[in-house]
Image (cartoon, rainbow, N blue to C red; front, side, top):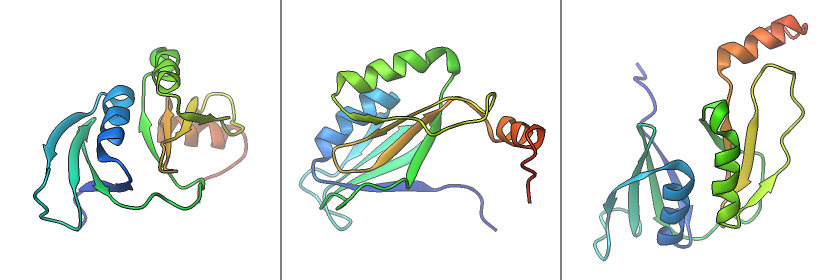
Length: 139
């Protein structure tokens, strides 16, 4: 039986640069840095973001961007503050996708290794309620 999400691993060219992004945007807590020791495939750092273990390992960046992404929930009242955090790092923000009113707002941005992140203000329950209200029933 699956108990929940264990961790997310991202391959990045520069773990220190990614650490700055995770700490600045996500208030990540760095809990481990392998430094010169390698217990895994390459140098790695571990972070906690909202209770989720995020690992970054040194390696080649993604060759291209896609819509595959990791989304974290944020309070709507802090939406503009997160836009400012992302902008302060010079990261590429992309326009949000079209949405039904009431399903929340999103900030989409790429890190320097082509990973796409989303900061979203809504919940699954809110989205499903809006879909039901607008005639898009769940399976």
